[in-house]
Every structure is written in structure tokens, then in C-alpha cells.
Amino acid sequence: MPDASDQEIRISGDSHVSEPPDLWQKEMPLKYRDRALSFPRIEYGRHNHSRAGGWDPKERLKDMAADGISAEVLYPTLAKGLFEQFFFEPVDLSLGQAGEQVYNDWMMDFCKEAPDRLWGQAFIGLWDIDYAIREMQRAKDGGLKGVATWVAPPDELPFTGDHYERFWSAAEEMDMPIGWHINTGFGAYVTRADEDRFGVIARQAYGHKVVAMKTVAEMILSGVLQRHPRLKIVLSEFEVGWIPFYLEDLDRKLGRGRNVGLDLFPSEYFSRQVYSTFMQDGVGGYLLQRWGADNFVYANDYPHAGGIWPYTDDTIELTMSDLPSETRRKVLGETMAKVYGQPMPDPIERMESDYTDEIWNRPWLRKAGEFTFDKSTMGLKM
Image (cartoon, rainbow, N blue to C red; front, side, top):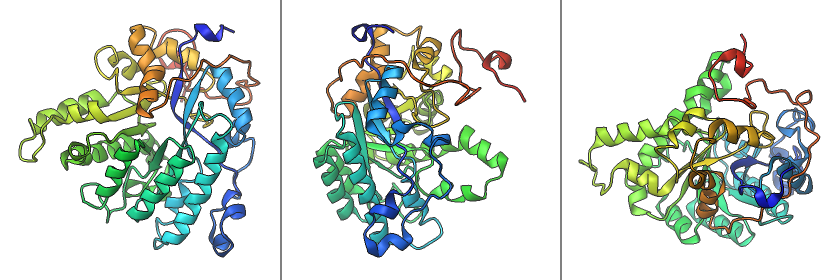
């Protein structure tokens, strides 16, 4: 293993915890336990609960060391069910808030093991802005670094309205970035329960990006980012190769704020305030030579089965080997530290892992060699 002092500092901008499946059944106030989130099909040792580091912070640090990751921004795995429980049932604010507080308490305890390396985020619904601001402050006081919430808002609460204004202002004042992760929220995500296989592939291939395009455009064109210039947004697991063209086209269609009262081009607001994570995005890595050096950030999605852990070395070689060292430093760590207002963590000492492909085989993951779209080289077959 290379000496830690020789490594680039790596911070994953999108990693996850794997909450204990019975967390809410055990920790919810008694009056809510009969309606607490329940996950009877979740099994330890399988899928997104394959690695003990998902729920045990000591094991987490070992797996981070195996991949050379010095810090991680943490999103939930199961807690998004706190929104999903209201897809087709009336919103019960007391029930939802109690569930959020259970998760946030658990996340605070998890991160106490290594607060310089485990950058947890609170999970907060934004129906009740007074509550959301209080819970954000409680989370910050408890050591959490940001807030994860819906990227697709409820239809009755669009981001273009004034409902969120006080929350955006509070997030600015507290310096708490807002994390928007795929599959989190309402809108287009409500119908996914009825998806056939085509629908699943379509959502994963382009549907998430449509959600992000719509939400970012609404935030920019409605003036949210102009009114809140210190608000920071992180798009997580949406990848980045699509972003330069999207912003170029948005600029071109709009002109310089024509008819909407903006002072800047949409791309300028994005460049100032919005960041997006990527894993093995070869197009994004190529475009980083021209655009996105201050906005695109590396992520490994640990411990999810669709992620790239423990192949960060291969990923860097595949998608970032041609980048200038300054750009690589930003993408791999410096930008995330700046966004979350944290000092750069010390390099983590590399360790061996018990991981094997036989335990967790992911043929889509590209390892070693040159980035390619040749299907046989990628290990893909119909």
C-alpha cells in the first residue's frame, strides 16, 4: 500500500449509511410505533446492507481506509421512506417529524466516532418551515454538516413558490449545504412503484437527470439563487456529463435574464452555488478539462451495490488521469471541504479489505486499463 502522506486527499461527496432496519420500530415514541417504518425484507449481508460499515462506524473507517477515502458526506438509505410513506397517504407531520428526529439522532451518534471523517447530514422534510429550521439548528449543534431533503418537492409546494424562503435564508446563515439525492421526494418519484423493467431502466438512465434539470432550472429562473447567493446545493448521484450542455442551452434559451429579472446567466448561478457528484462518469471526466473543475466532485456511493467502492484507484485512473493536478485535488477533495466548511482531513492510512468480486460482483464497474465504450472490454453482455 502507498504511504498515506503520498496520497491525494479523497472525500466522497455522496456516500451512505445503512440504517438498522428496525431503527424506527425500536426508537420511535411509543404512540407512533404501530406506524413506524418497517423493513422486514432487508437482510444484513445483502445488497445495500452488505457491508457492516453501513451501520457500524468503526467498520466504516476500515472500509474507507481500504479505498483511501479520508472523509465522506453521508446520506441515508432507508430514511427516504419517511417521505415515501406519504406518497399515497395524507401527510402526518407529527409522525414524519418523529421519524426524522430518530434518524438524525442516530446519525449524530454514528458520526461521533470520527467527526473529522464522517460528515453526516440531517434528513428533514420541508412541509413545516419553522420545524425544519429548528431541526436544522439542532442538527448543526449536534455536529451534522448539512441537510438532505427532497429534490422533487410535493406538487403543492413547488420550489418556485415563496414557501421555502425562510428556510433558504436559515441555511445560508447556518452555512448548511442542501443535499439533493436521486430517488428522494415526490413528483416523478411517486409513480415509480408501478414501474415495469423498462420504467426502471428509463428512470435510472435519464429520469433522474430530468428531475435535476427541472429542479435546478426552477431554483435559478425563479430567482432563488439570486436572492440567496450563499445558499449551496449539492446534486448527488445525478452524475455530471450532461451538465455543461444543459447549462449552455439554458443560457442560450434565456439570454441574460430576459423577462425574468435575473442579473446573471443560469450557468453563472450554477457555477457559484451548485455542485454535482459523479462516480465513473467518463464523459464528465473528459469535460473536466474544460468545464466543472470547481463544481464536479468525486463520490463512491459506499456501501450501495451500484457504487464504485473499493475501486477509487481504478476510477481515478480511468476518468481523471489526464486532468491537471490542481483540478484533481479539487474534484477529489478540496471542493467538498470548501462546500461543507470543513478543514481538509488528514490522509487516511491505507488498509487491506476483505472485499472480493465473488462476494459482490458488479460487472458494469470498469477496472484498470483505459476508459472505453467497448462492451466486451466493459464486461457487458446481453
